[in-house]
Structure formats: C-alpha cells, structure tokens
Length: 213
Image (cartoon, rainbow, N blue to C red; front, side, top):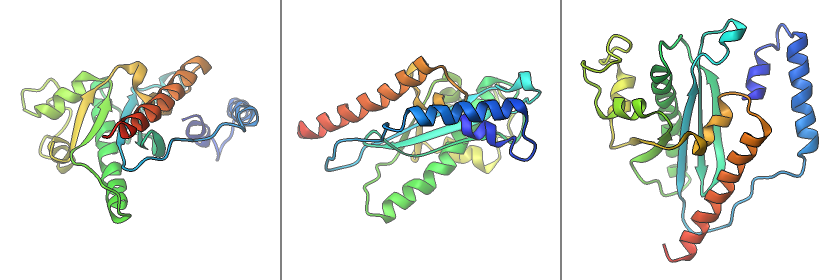
C-alpha cells in the first residue's frame, strides 16, 4: 500500500512524498532477511481476502476509497493488489462491495491461470471480508436493500457478485483480515501481527496435509 500511495506523486513529487519514500527504503534496508516461505505439501489450499479503506485519504483532499485483495496458496501470498476505486463511495459498505467485486474479477483470471497450470481449484472460492454488510449484500441483492439507489442492480458486475456458485463472501474479524495491510499504512505492531497470521496459516495448512487430509 505504501508504495502504491507514494507512486501517485511520481509526476509531481512533494517533500512529504520524498520523506515517505525514504521511510520505505529504510524499511527495505533493515528487513533484507525477510522472505516468503511455506512448507511443501501435496495439494493446494487457496485463501482469499479483500478489504477497503473508505475515503482513507480524505485529509489530503482525496475522497476515493481504496480496494485491496490478496490470494494465498497454502499460506504463500502469490498475488495481491491495492488500487483506488474509480468513484467516491457513499458508505463503507459500498466501498467494501466495490472491493469485493474488484477481487472477484481479478481472482477469476488468477484461478483460470492456476487451472491451466494443472492446479486443482475448488469452486466456489471463499473470499474473507471484515464487513457483514458486504456479505449480506451478496446474499440478498434486492431492491429493498439499504444500498438501493447506490448501485444499479441490473449491472453485470453485480450479477457476477451474486453468483455464489463461483465465489462466496464470509465474515472474519478485522484483526485476521490480511488484506488490511494493503489498504493503508500500518504501524509496525499491526503489520507484524498480520505477518504472523500468514505464517501461522501456512503451518496449519501443512499440519492438515500431514494429518492425512
């Protein structure tokens, strides 16, 4: 997320942007020994997370929210994104729904690539979110929704979101939503906690396979 935010100032850099870049470089210089590592097992468990930061840059005069998503294979992060949403979301629930749609579109391509590479992909794919309104909206996209008038329920991307044979959104605690690190800059303690969450996930998956799963 930090690199995505600072990249927005590439054309017209500011002193604040340069300071942020120096902080990123300092982080990289002191974490050179960090690496992605998971045990080798037979089989693949896919884990998908998405999140949004509703108008997180409002204090800088930017009302656009940010979508973020990450996909892990056996606990190994292998694809992620962090990007601005095209229009201003009127609520945190609306921002989460757009983020879910962004991940679904991205994840379909990634899973097709995995299938072409000979990997087993189980459908529907589970997508973990930390907003219950997002789950409720996927379960019941009716005109009586509190979000009526925000989205045109006839649009194709909303119909794809509603197709639970392909993707199902489930609620998780915010503290366990790994994609939170892609929506906004985090303090060191929070980032470290999420990194440990990824590591423990990989260990649990490996133990499950070794136990005869």
